[in-house]
Image 1 (cartoon, rainbow, N blue to C red):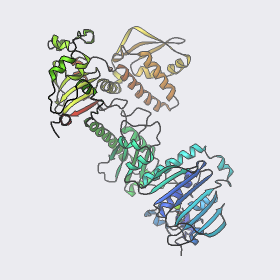
Image 2 (image 1 turned 90 degrees about the vertical axis):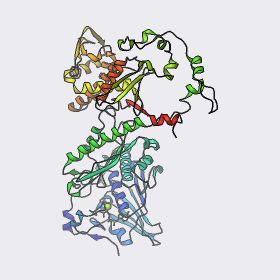
Image 3 (image 1 turned 180 degrees about the horizontal axis):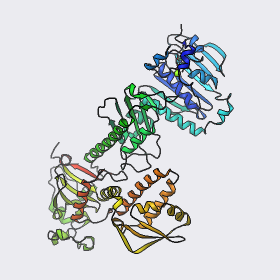
Image 4 (image 1 turned 90 degrees about the horizontal axis):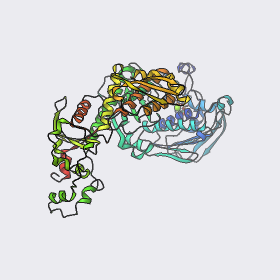
Length: 615
Ligand code: ADP
Ligand code: MG
């Protein structure tokens, strides 16, 4: 005897609007859910022409007996409940008992299904809701369902099907979502009979991401967890600051096991990444949210793709915070990750020291005699600095060769300083005119001077843009541009004005810069203005509030980049100290506005290991 019961008309009416089949991906979702409900552990999905030509799903689930294989196409035929009250507690997906009926109404279905421990199954062909044929066949246990001639009976709807690529993209997103939601199921996806994804059971979501996205993505994914909350919790994986995309296709949310699309959740996630990845770039994230069922309504959308939370703000705020905390933790951990000195990196030593047995003491005298060249001190490179003048012996000056700068700490430049937290550190010097070397209790700390300064200025520009100190240019700076550039910039002069740059049109193809924020003096103004015009061009189609927000962020990041000290700039001790003090007081100080880290710690422990003082 089959498991299917017919819902009464009354019960059926109580159930919300009928199944809406608009496009292939809707069908696939229903069929995948049915396969999972049937207890399948392996599910293969085949599509042709983005599902428009055919969709086929083969599962190894419980199958149906001969009666059910016919009955399942009746409207409101379901094995999954018999009264609407059961809706509240039902755990399986489908409960309306009308997916197969709806699909049968708009296509041709070929169903082959066999129950476990039976030797024969049944093949049923249904077209436009009419049974065309039914035959007993030999088939492996499980269900094989094939959909073709989609919307042949509804030419209007068929005409509105999207391009194959669009449908195919939607199918891939759905497939990914099922894979993430059910890591223990073996899913495979075929398009035009070619295998696109093979995802055997995975231990966790991280392993799934490696199967679906990229083998190496594991290095860039970090765990996300919530503080214990009363009515909800979430967990998942998110990409770190080093990994971002141009689209949102790697962002997935699941609420109580259902894949949902919720722009508020996405926005909260993106807010967590503010200033960590560039604007207009998107992270990868797979986040599963568990909410007290009384605090969420899943029935606001006929296909249950959306949810409504009772207290959405609490979840959004917690999500945004959790993302921020996870990213900061990851960055500070990365900075403390010991750096491996590979043989190629130590080539300076390898080249300069003949290979000796481990027991021969290293002869420093010989090394210095051979390698110190006595080039004259390059006065021009050093900015006069009264504070260190006394310490700069002529001997130190003579040692100023590149090789020595690489090998020996500039002890004569050492100063002791404290950050506002009273953390003691010593600035040892500048390496390659790019990195500041700092000695701290825990080890050696390297700061990228450009990244650090960029972050400091960005935060400064963002916080105090209303009262940025500006200077009137004595000789106003003139820039020539094309008609298109003039058209774009003259509509948006406010962006510049708001950020302290006063520009006016001075001729048909000419602009003149009258005044500037102090930090921008001596920078490549033309470059800044022209790249901002390119941004205006790119984002002008956005609604005005979003446009202003994005433009301000981007413009400030560019100003920070242009005004920041560069790699190659020689810094005085005072300016190094100022930079470090400013950095320690800055928000988001672990990365620059483009997401690069501002510093790295080489722990004492690691250094001692490298020199085999410790094992
Ligand atoms: P619902 O899933 O809401 O019950 P459907 O129209 O999707 O409604 O399916 C009707 C019934 O057909 C299901 O209740 C189930 O008993 C049976 N069925 C559908 N697909 C499968 C499958 N892949 N394996 C076994 N049984 C299935
Ligand atoms: Mg169903």
